Image (cartoon, rainbow, N blue to C red):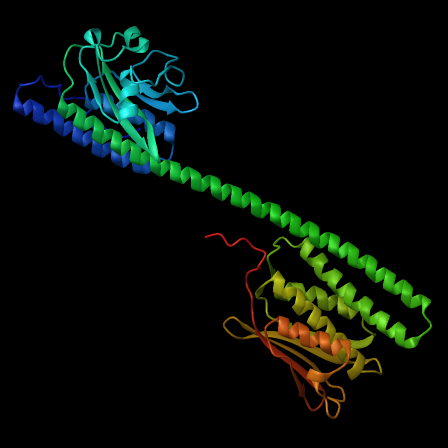
Length: 413
């Protein structure tokens, strides 16, 4: 609840034509109460508390024991006492009244014009609501609360004591209601943003579950394909076909391993490059000949999974090709490095110490499936594959721009 130092010594509501100093003190208190409520409205994010405090302060500003906020219910075409002070138990949150122009609150809401009724018993313009009669109310003042896109409801101060609400009281009430309307708009916008953010978070969580499930199913399906290729290889007696089936099975197995890693990852949009490629290289070592060794130097940078998948396939192709063609005897080392060259850029290097590039080597016009796959994956990563004669051996180099966010990720603000 907001602080109010004036509450203990309230100014007395002046009579019309009364002492000017008394009138000035009364109006100054109203201004101070409005300013204090404005500060409170900026701090609170709870609509019921805002409305309840508004009725308390507004009643204090007009030196009355009764005040209420009447919220319009469009589906029911009536008002509900949304917040209030001075009323009997069971009124606030439950009591309803009509919204037609025959009632003061309905007239104020539908026309936008404030209503002052200083003699409800003699009122001929409107009927007196039963709620006011029950509480002995003799005079009332009603002003429209404007919300986002239209009227929110009506702010009403009621009094059972003799006296008059004046034009100055009306000015205070209308300014106070305008301030309350702005505060309500702000809270409605904040609530809409929170709801939108919650829906976005829910959608993102659902997307991550689906992504993991897809990767899991793809991994299982590819494992079945690899098994079928192995079966076909065992049934074949043609060495060339056996070699081609072995290569196909190895490529399918690598893709399955990549999806297995993605399925088990806590983060589906990005991966730690050193951890991800480290697992892949461990698998390559397991399937390599006993004399083949693979040394690695991989930077622990974050990379989008969209980019990590083709990079993993490229590395698998380069390393297995190096083992196969640089060391046909089954013994030798391949060195793999992925290191940053400048902010946002990585350089992939794969080296061996074999016989080097064959005479007249032309990677762009190579006919083998492996070379075409390497070229395609290199271009997919956004780099230009480069083959070098390392004297001794062969060096493959690819520089590319690292992608830090997956294109599958939501691109919210």
